[in-house]
Image (cartoon, rainbow, N blue to C red; front, side, top):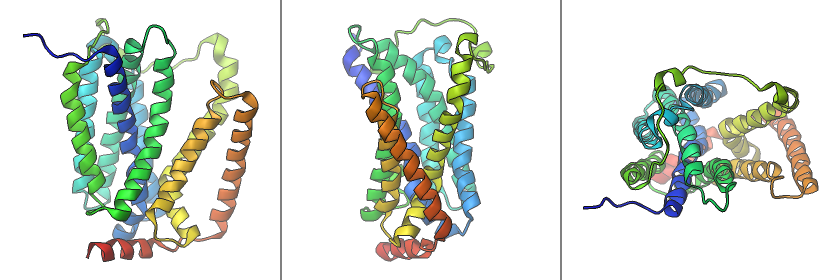
Length: 314
């Protein structure tokens, strides 16, 4: 009996969706940080550390496993990433203190880093031959869309859904289980090569021809992602404080707005250069305004967020 296999087109878009869900999960905790902070009485420094360990784990996984799927195949690496991601969702559900949040975020970073290299390469393998740039375009858009959607949907579920601290992670756990079950029906067309263990040794370098361009662009790239980290970790709590609001959607909206502007400012590929420059300038002005306002307004609504959440839960 022949095994069921999806077409390359269907497989491509299924993988793009799975990729987006990995980043969806990364953005999902952001609207909840203010609630965790109020429940467990930890500092803003601890909150940023919880976000920071995710980024460090992600970087470590990217550096060590980025080429692993070239040797073991795309499917085995993605399956491993999905297993790690499922465990991280369970850790979020089981979290009763800061330690479990750290563990969940480390696992999430490792799973996302494992998946990023393999899924990006798999998208290139299955992209339509008549549109050879589609794979790289989707691989760049899916993470940003996933982060924005994760923050927004998580905010909606926390605001209006039952069991707000666990619902989004339970749903994501189910999504990743379904994705795990779907992997066997997707063609893994990559040619395996020996040397998987050696491929995990990080190799960091810049080709000589690109070094001047790299040096010129590195500061802006670092600043952009540092700003993203600020918004993803402290953005929701600052928004609630500045707006004097208990709406978790306000916190999620900060992240969604940043991701939309980031996507537009980086999309000179299909936007006129003047439009892209205008959006980038708007991002800089908004960032300076955000810093000025956050510096003169202390955060004071964490207790309101805590009371609102538990009053609704009864």
